[in-house]
Length: 431
Image 1 (spheres, helix red, strand yellow):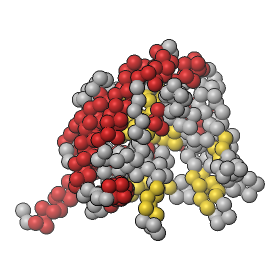
Image 2 (cartoon, one colour):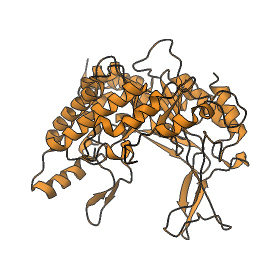
Image 3 (cartoon, one colour):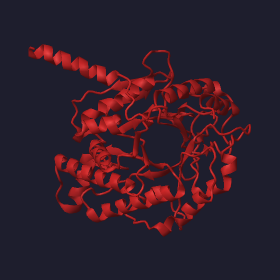
Image 4 (tube, helix red, strand yellow):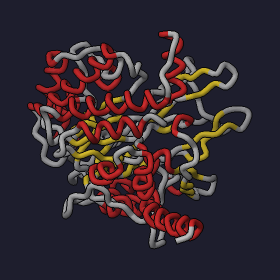
């Protein structure tokens, strides 16, 4: 076969594999589980006191459409586990005994697929002492999950407030998986930095140890990941007319230039280190604005193809394909801000009463949720966020400290929601 023809065949094959709907590490016959994860994230104490009300809708008294919730845990001092986990603070079981007690004292009927939230933050990849605290904390989290009857963890891998400042050539926010940023930190702290290849090897070792620590004592743990290697394969954008575009990327840009270029190595390590009975799911937070359409290959199929395409970045693509499954996140009250030069305005806001003004009408959200639920047999989560308050000119209102003023939205109290949305979610995922 001549070179040009051979190139054409392999290119066509790669395109077919990338575009084909991919079910990943599927468990046949399993119903997709619907989770709630939003600004109204409850902690264990709240769940213990309010489980009866939480398992009923806040409006008509029927069972909640959710199968589970992503929750928070506080230590004895009232500090949140997910904000401390990655900071170098070493946990002890006694720190979270009260959280375990709360969970053990709670009888769950409908919300039986519950997860403990864990956030990533910046950490020195070559500091063994620091990483020993993370591995210790992973063991404590596994203990909380097992003792408290939780399915596992929701690992929030979003690099919050990530930013590169071209003028000073510095980074801010979270940048754990950005090679250029962590190498700069290492240079500043130690006077030298490792190559990208050395970082990849080290990050993979850390991922292996992390996956092993999470599942050593809890082999059936489920690990849900908000942002994974699939993030590198495509970009999701929304225009002012609510038109969603999923733009696939080629493989020409080296990973060392990506803001999350070290994540594939970390995922490889986790897949290798975690027990084979563990479930690892790419939740694809990029699905937040996806809408249902009538095409044969839906937006959810096209997004899922990016999970398959991300095998390209794995050093163990067969393991990646066999062990990693996928789900979706949907942002019910999807909101976007923009500047008009005089202040920040809402491109898409949230009004539970005048629903035609929202990004998703109740019916449109039901259709999107049904499409998501039918595309995976693992997990879909609904994200809700507090609504912004605006003044008479339509600009965002700020308090004295410069923070936007927001109206709480909660599935558990009913605040900021309407029966229309509740009913449509219940139709899409009835108990």
